[in-house]
Image 1: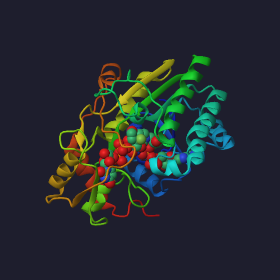
Image 2: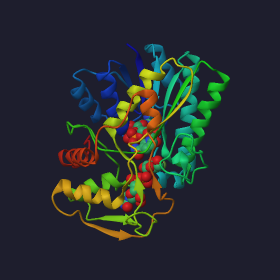
Image 3: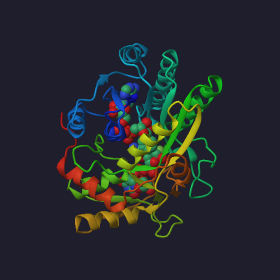
Image 4: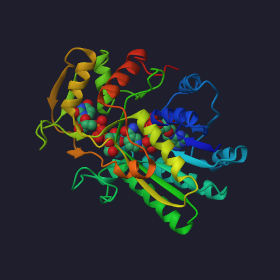
Length: 339
Ligand code: NAD
Ligand code: UFG
């Protein structure tokens, strides 16, 4: 049984992944500073798992706090979710993003090396492909300079991991490039809990559906796509979590750099999402067309073949599961995790 440190394990994707790790027989330890999550999630995770998962309150940028965890546990591998993720905020606060995401990852890798822990799985993003030249996007597609500080921190940490692996070939560095995670655990106990008005499409849709927000603004309907709205590869967060388990099964102690797209391979437009959501709630979700959002790529969806062939992983849940589970979470928790 392997012990896995999950940085950012109290967050949206981390919390779902902890549950799937336990189901698969791994021993996760949650490490989080709660800068974008709430301690209330821990009891929910424990309830779903039927046991108490060890957790440590700490910041990945503080060496002593990381060392304390490595002193107390024999850690076999790290799944690194901890980071800041709001594109717009990163433009306003680039130094905070480089500090948290790049310096934080550097500190984590440095402590891992110190303790001879050489299995690292990183939460990267399809944002590293920028505006892709060809869709669906394979792992061979070029990584581009990002158009915002958030995206650039993902590019930078990918490179840092690759350079470290060259210098210390015992490292197993896994770069998982997520497409658009949505949905929530079937229980309705855990889900995405954004602060303030959501930036992302799915939490915005769910908040309109429960009446917290008036209507969705669709950013642009004059793109060169089938209905003029942008296309994304939405993936259920539980499928994404299972992708991490498969990546661990396959890559633990397998030295090298391993890069996988985690997406479904299917692209849906914003209007497809509105229609699917309207179907789930039984009436037309209020929406209007608005100006394009600067920086949006037109279409972005994965070729997920490599993950299927090498990891034996593919997304199983469909758009109806994604909308139903997101809505269920929002309905059960209109104010997210209350303190
Ligand atoms: P999230 O904000 O819900 O989770 C991140 C967690 O990390 C939070 O609990 C936060 O408190 C914690 N954290 C942040 N900085 C920390 C620090 N310095 N020390 C300790 N803990 C810290 O975000 P998420 O949606 O679960 O995303 C997880 C990871 O996946 C992030 O790295 C994100 O950039 C990446 N990612 C997310 C998406 C997405 O759309 N959600 C897409 C691609 C990649
Ligand atoms: N959208 C709207 N109205 C909204 C919110 C979003 O029309 O209120 C549209 C966007 O314009 C876009 C689509 O819905 O066309 C999806 O937008 P999201 O913000 O949900 O997702 P993005 O693909 O823009 O961004 C996501 C992550 C980023 C990451 C990026 C690339 O949120 O962190 O994917 O991987 F950088």
